Image (cartoon, rainbow, N blue to C red; front, top):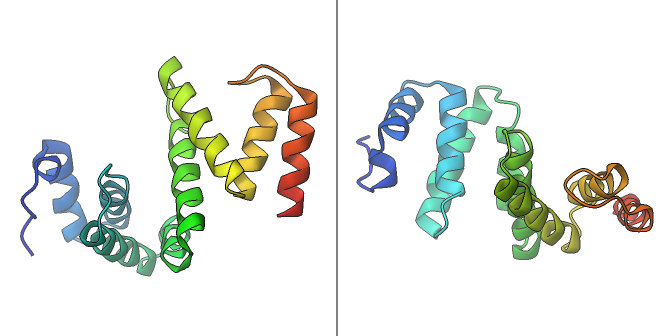
Amino acid sequence: MSNPSSNWLTEPTVAALYAQAEKGDPEAQFQLGRKYFDREAFTASKSSEAFKWFTKAAQQGHPKANLRLRFFDRDEEQKRADALFWLADDYWVSEMTEDDAKEAVKSLRLAAELGHPKAQCYLAKAYWEGSLLEANTAEALKWFRLAAEN
């Protein structure tokens, strides 16, 4: 299969990722799935490409690929909550700038408001510890309770 023509796919790092994914590297397949999935203009064709690469990675035992595949079996609101949570989680595992932290909290709050239990836990923890948000015990307890109910 040839590399689809698209600006973001021809960037050197993405082109190398695509080549590695084609050779069967499960981490590259997972990351390529994320590239398709995380694009701002997420479309049905990008969805099918993301599904394809997540499936290939999952078949080789990639630990996060199966989690991402679950996304495709959910209703639209659940999908939105998952996507927002994953976006926030991606910020969390990288070195965050102040702007990244603001975006992470924004995405996390939206996912939590949509009922995503892990997002609710992360938001509660952020309030409890005063990390990324001003410490607020009442808000922390509210989000911990909601997460426990979900």
